Image (cartoon, rainbow, N blue to C red; front, side):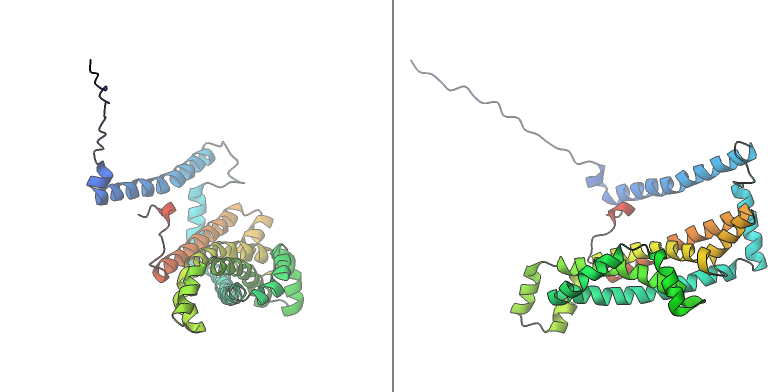
Length: 287
């Protein structure tokens, strides 16, 4: 008597390619169109809801003016030339402070990330200064530089410095040791090690910190101008609130928002141009 082993059932799974595999370019365009539509539709819906609430007296339009009122007032102030001096005052302070803070933060971050002795000597002190609210340093800068542009620029530079310093030092420390070893095996000089190893590996993370610092710089300068300035968007907002000119106050707030977004986006675009080898920002729908 002979027996035969039972045959095992085999199942063949076949995965058919989807639209993303068959038409990647078309799928990417549709996804980008959807993301762009959502990015425009959500704030537009909120503005329309605000407009409706103000016109229907659901909210007090003396405290929260309708967006149409804010737009008309902003247009008139811009056409009369009353808005641009404040915008320019804030912009030049942000640019000057950002440039100083970025250069010094990157230089010290690179040095501390490369030399453990320097890191051991300076990191505890800088960590302690980092947690100090930057607006608390404004009286110190006023004593150092007096009234004028100096305290405003110094406050922005200090704020930007810490963001860039931390991101740079962390990025340099995160460079794989294998990359450094390869450079040493090929006899790379210190400059060649920096140019061909440390800089390409660390620059994407450094630029992320620089982009965050761009937005924070606008926040700091507006807060500083509300305390110790006679012009600028921060002073415009604070002065308009004191005079109960809420439409002017919201014009200043909108200008600050636009300035922050544009400045941050310029830093992001510059980062993409400087680091074409880095992964793109997935949050922006890039592939």
